[in-house]
Image (cartoon, rainbow, N blue to C red):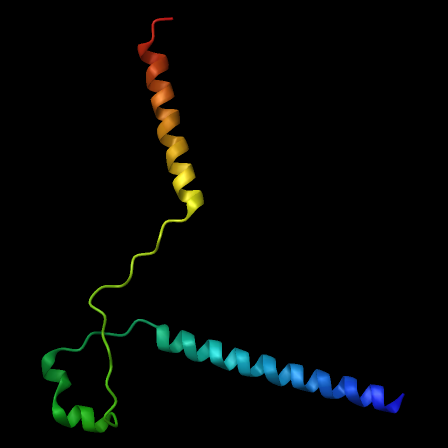
Amino acid sequence: MVDMAKLKEDALRRKQEHEEKELKRQMQRRKSAAPRKRKTASSRSAPNTAARGGRTQVVQAQPKKRKRSISRWVLDILLVLGALLVMVMFINPF
């Protein structure tokens, strides 16, 4: 019985350590994914790169566009069909 209690404690400790590591990874991803200010050519001078430790930074020209989800497509199609149905009802004399 003592061994089972010890095994449970070890498993719980490992689980908590794993969750902490995952949380740290997510925080690092969020920090690295945060939008950065664009730097002008004058601020990218040689002394400035030496001060940063020689690390290079990639700046994207434009952020990626998000794809429209399927539910958004369906909603747009239904709205268009509904508008067409209303127009036909106004035009139709019957």
